[in-house]
Image 1: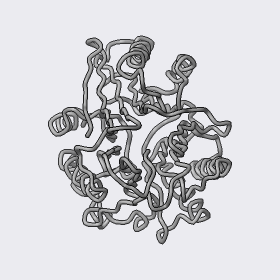
Image 2: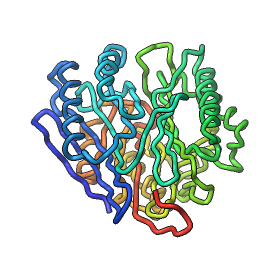
Image 3: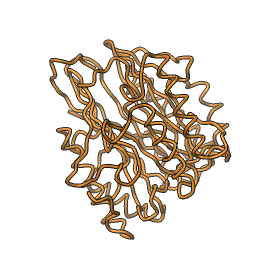
Length: 383
């Protein structure tokens, strides 16, 4: 059972979070911190957000350990250095920073993920380890390089990640659960990212006949304009193949390889006491791979929800089990419409709406989400 809570620390900041608490074991918190008034300077907004995070850590989440943070910025080139300087006091987890402007007109927002009863440490390979009950959860944020094209950058990112996982006795195909690829000028650079991912995956036995990895490939910018692709990732050491279920929802969606890309629509990971579901970036698409309702953001939103619901159902979950969501808009002018739709359908769900073009120009909106549900699987260890 997930509990949703909203806290207004003051009139300028709002905190929405979900709490999943099993009868025993690890509690999970998914937290969205958003500012509500655009009129303040970036320095003022950054201080307010970080002060709010610190207050939450000392009070509401004093038993929780932060495992992952992603900051959404409106102008990464001018804002990242100040954020990184401030983060030296808060560098307690895997860190992701991306230019995807909050659509409410503010300059910064934060998604952060916390768990109780876990031990954490930074690993020399750039991974962040979260350990509990024999599992080692390996988070990676803000990985990038400056190779000459998006294709070469992606190839280098993935090949390096394969080596980093190998150092932890993991394989990309066996242990990686989730990736995010943030692509600058996605209409130009997405094809190179896809080409490199397809080719590296083939070397790792990730094919249409085996499986792929749940993923979001979306518009997003690093502060350095030479960086065209940035990657976040999540893997688990200690997981067994029978604990992983890939989600297809073929009544609503087609296999991604049919239109030349290589990712899973969603992945469910089963533990003794719960199941976690990672839904990839999902848009208004049908099971023929066609864009549905071009030009109509309202109808695209409803079809997107229908697709996500079908994927969740395949994992024996529903929207009642969703603990957080990120919504990407191609055109920020659609924000008012989309916010109203989400507020009406999911008034308590922690979510953020950001400006980030989807990989096809006709897709006006995309969402990803994480769900968690109590379960009893005697053949698996608890989380």
